[in-house]
Length: 397
Ligand code: NAI
Image 1 (cartoon, rainbow, N blue to C red):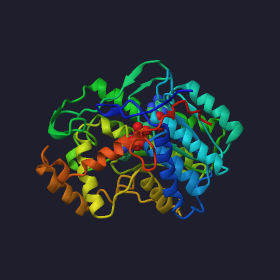
Image 2: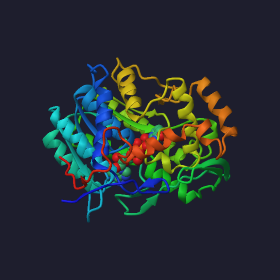
Image 3: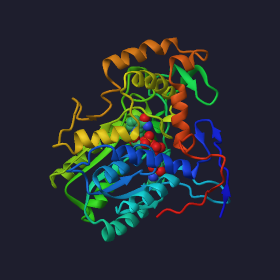
């Protein structure tokens, strides 16, 4: 037993501690939102979420389970508590999710490990064969810094850089609350290749092939992975940068996977989601400043959504609404439509050149950014007594 008071310890764009009860309360908030929506009648029944412990993957798991009564199986890479240190946020999120799912009479199980490895795929498939043998939705929501190639053993590291020219941009140092200028250097060819290896679609396709071969994909099975496009001021670092090249590969693999699922009268696609504060997005230069401005504008217009509202809307109004997918001209499904609305982007563009360290809190919703950031780690959640000692060793399942 390891009871202690847990406080946030922020280092750059990560927080190295997480609060077990705060994470659980945050998960329950998301569940409550989904439950406040009408039950999806034709929703998914048996769902595999790869990258299920935080951000968009966790939101997908919550929407499937509590919005449609689905059985869910999660795959994630999280750190359990050791030597009296708190576990990672995704560990506590998963423990809380699975406890709530079981209370609601829903099957929920998971595996913690490297989703890129062949061994883990085999382990998951063996368990699925016994416990959830017909999957009708596979959500692929990994955001990872590195990948070991399962065949060659080579380790690839993804980078967040431009392609071609360096990019000089206004930027926000979220730790020091400083608006400054950042120069982002271009990735070399090797770095672009590595980023595509990690964040492209190769591993998504390997998962689908393995699941298909094991006979686990149900008639009508769907599969979705997530991407981001955003406005031109972030394109050099995102859409046209090294991560953007990986996303292009993801779009190409979506087509290949779609062809496999079509045989079962299913489909695969990429959904382009809204920019939100997650552990993955806080590491991207320039993006936190854009998000702080965007939140200000979207909140004023009553259009703001978090991960769970985004995914719930994707499920409810598109994926499980008489197949009404909102494809764009490039074959991508868009749920970033409110972010990209002309009036929203016009206001963001007007604020962008005016922001400085001095007026940051006035012109942007940096407070909202920080609140969301700390909430990712279970801090600042309503109803949690942060002065009390809490048990940091929390079992999953
Ligand atoms: P996140 O950092 O919150 O979640 C990443 C998930 O991947 C976690 O569950 C983590 O445990 C898991 N993971 C990482 N490495 C793993 C490994 N080797 N094996 C097993 N699991 C592993 O990230 P977020 O932001 O939810 O990103 C998910 C997807 O959504 C990404 O494709 C991202 O590009 C996309 N997206 C994110 C947006 C944002 O603003 N955050 C916007 C639009 C798309």
